[in-house]
Amino acid sequence: MSSTSHTWSMRALALGGAIVFALAFSGRSAGDLQSSIAAKQSTADALRSAIAAETTRIQATDDGLARARARLASIQGNLSAHERQLGEVQTNLLAARTQLLELENRLQQATRALAANLVADYEGARPDVMTVILGARGFTDLLERVSFLQRIGRQDAQVMRDTRLAREAVKRQAMALAVLEQRDRRLTDEILAQRNQVAALQAALLGQRIAAVSARASKTTQLAQLSSQLRSLEARAAAQTTAALGGIAVDTGGMVQPPPGAPAAVAQVIAAGNAIATLPYVWGGGHGSFHDSGYDCSGSVSYALAAAGLLSSPLDSTGFESWGDPGPGQWITVYANSSHAFMVVAGWRFDTVALAEGGTRWTQSMTDTSAYVARHPPGL
Image 1 (spheres, rainbow, N blue to C red):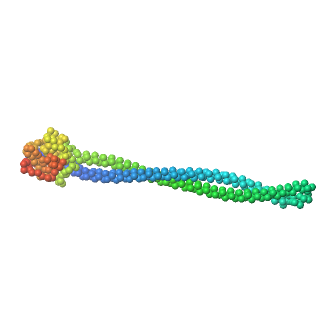
Image 2: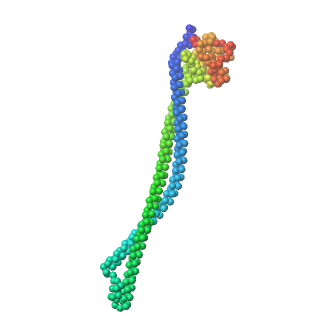
Image 3: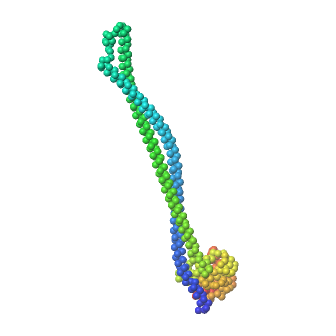
């Protein structure tokens, strides 16, 4: 083995040992991260849909509350009318009871007067016609006694009429009072029933709204937490797929992945190629420094090879004609002439011509290589 080949091999081993594990682990963990991100994004979408549904439900509940308030206003108007009626009924009840009390007092007075007359008749204290005639002291006295007797008779008749009328009035007033009391109870029951109905409706709607708002708040909190987790996972994924390898930026999760069993240096070249695969073509780019905003053909190849320690400084296309070992390699082959350079890595062509055609330097289509010198890294 030549000293140059030995140096490249040692440098590849020095960089590659840890990086083989890192790339393999990165591939697995990147897949895990992407799975976690996809799962959390799906959960976030479900939460957003649930929040939208809760918002719709809250709006519907608000509409229901508005209708309930309108209904309450209508019922309140009926309640006010019923309450006025109830007030009138209660006033009438009070007057009816007062009148009934007065009638009952009159009935008691008439009854007592009638009883007194009956007692007087029974005890004989009241004179009859014969007694009046026999006891009269002259015609004038007789006329006065007969007139007195007639007045007593009329008084008795009046007492009887008063008693009868009082009984009838008391009966009528008692019936009217019963009707008023029934109406009072009916109005009171209607008012209580309507108030209970409105209270139950408002309580149910408010309960629904509180539940919906609480559910939306809970889901919003979950979404905020999930979004924070997503940002963290995405940051980890970005950090994982864009790392630094010997000062060269690489992308282990890019378009091209090394095949199973590929050497570490191949994986490193592919990861570095992923990092600049879509950067613009810039003539002379990547020659003053490996770090540039764009790369030309040989600058692109130099950048990718440097990540595996296969170059210490950029080469132009002419320099690649004498680089490495002659002929195609097993894993990596650089094709160069005086005006252009590209390489094939594990079956993928890495070429700025492909960038102009497909937006990335990587392509699996081949091109005519008859005008190029084929070179490869020793051992690859």
